[in-house]
Length: 68
Image (spheres, rainbow, N blue to C red):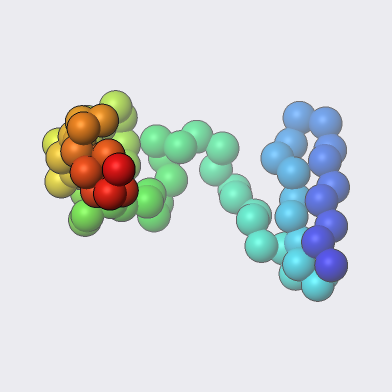
């Protein structure tokens, strides 16, 4: 059972079987201690795909991958 309670001016508290699973003390992303990473690159600021090791792909390349 998932129970979501929304209180004014606070983040929603998400529980699963009575256990809080999304508690966050800090509401400022830049001050989070364990920011998410993509290809070992911390996701802060306005990262470009190339900065996290992802190459851009064209529509033609997508169609080729999908096999027409």
